[in-house]
Image (tube, rainbow, N blue to C red; front, side, top):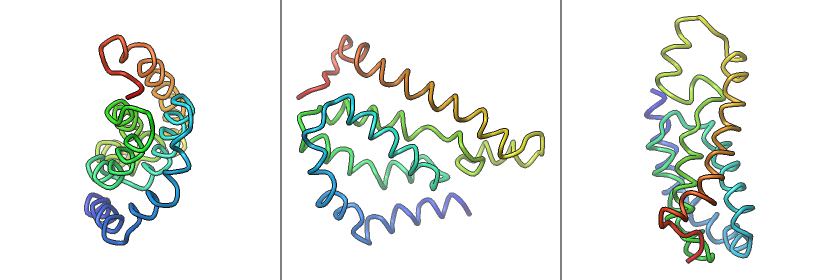
Length: 148
């Protein structure tokens, strides 16, 4: 049921015009932001939005067009920004309902939602730090430029 809810949210975003509204009213304000600030902002926003999705695929289907649009209208490489986005959208460590596996283990009763959050917060912070370090130092060495 939660999987279907995630797909319904993705469908509602597209059919309700949310994607177009955000692209028209918000993204153009971010086009002149420095890469570090933009990538950090994208990660935080996507991590917060991810709390409402139980499925990674529905999250990507509903929000990836925004990130690619942002990359296109700014000087930042859309593929590089998309990689940052994918790392942020893969975080699902705040509440057990963010992933099927988490719900399964949570249902066994060995830990509480608070325990899940206590472990999830440092893991998410580590993912942000490692992703930004890789994005700015490792990916360019491997040929993925930050700027177009």
